[in-house]
Image (cartoon, rainbow over all chains, first blue to last red; front, side, top):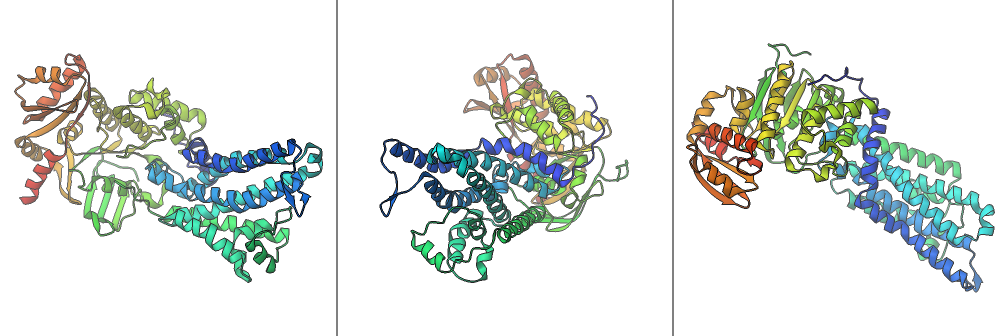
Length: 279
Length: 312
């Protein structure tokens, strides 16, 4: 038996999180959940392909009050309705709540928790892996949707808007991921809690006047969306009655606070919580 | 705190663990001395709970447990000195054995190059050098046990805590693993190993803790319990490529009292487990009776002895 080199110093939280990220990224990317994610983000791409084909035959794919809707507007609607309002919360929910739950269910958490690293670093590393995975799948889907819906001649004029959209979606994934990472770390049935937050609390509170709207992610994200919001649903009309969209700096500040607060809470919860594996 | 011949490596005081209404461990006060200690008890006795408390995977409901003077639950840096091989058969199946062991040891602060070198060394120790390049999903039960052992010892810890490490191994691998444990202790390190099979523990150490129903029933010398277990019939399942050929070889063995076939396995009853295990190991080594994939012993044997002890 040969001897190993002297024991290295224990890793800091950030260094440990980077290592956990490296361990988790591949596992997360090639998991069955990624197939689900690909199906979800494939929806807008499919719609964009249909739009493109219909337009290619000279027929207007979409008309509002008899006027042809331009590709840029269609893309804007897709960003708002499909990505910001649905895909980003759903992915945040399914990935965020499972950051620790997957390791616990697979009983592999023991290997991470028996290494000389802070337990919170395990969550942080897995959260970073979630961001990388979802970013790698969602952002290319947005690019594809953009290039399929926006005519090439309009690309130079709208490209800045695309970059902004990508940044907003990345921010949405980051904040929703942090919120749901906390839900996943804290609750025994995180998916139920997450669904209530994403599709119960957020739409209801957004439709009501008052300060409670500050405690949603959607409100601050929508303040960043550069496209005109559609107002063709009853919910949007109700929202429109009480709409007071915060300024971009305010929205950014709130999103940062939510991100940091929930990530910190999630790390703290993981550090203190005992995970009992089923025998 | 360094362990000296006088200093216990693990100290538990009034340690209890409840899972809701169920008691996993009940008011255990014990000191585990340096060297190799066997934790012996039937399934559900509390061995795994005790090991999880030792390694900080669980938090005590009551009492304290210290490993080398430290409570691991709230001192993650102390894991640098501890290697834990858990009971559960859980892995990142898509990784190769080498990738997995190397990835885990990077969490100990090893650089990529150091981690790779340490992983190769650890895999060599557990005889998985070639298989280390295969995906864990393709491993046999015995190989999975060994790669789990590799991740526990890859960072050269002072204490190895092994929960049923021999489960699913073939006789030759069992022998090698037992030797590995003994060699580890010869280097001045410490091993706490659990099993529900007395002769496995006995092959590694004479210092045992008997645990049943969440309590330490006895600690120290192995000989008394050994005498008791030999008076009870001992059942062994031998998973073999040719069970009938194996049965033919064992037919005239005085250690064997009864044999039966069961799903590609030979089920043997013996009152001389040591002699029988010796015979099965030499048959596995020679290959005379075909390949022997796995030797397991249900914990009924030990349960019977423990029931007897509890009644005393």
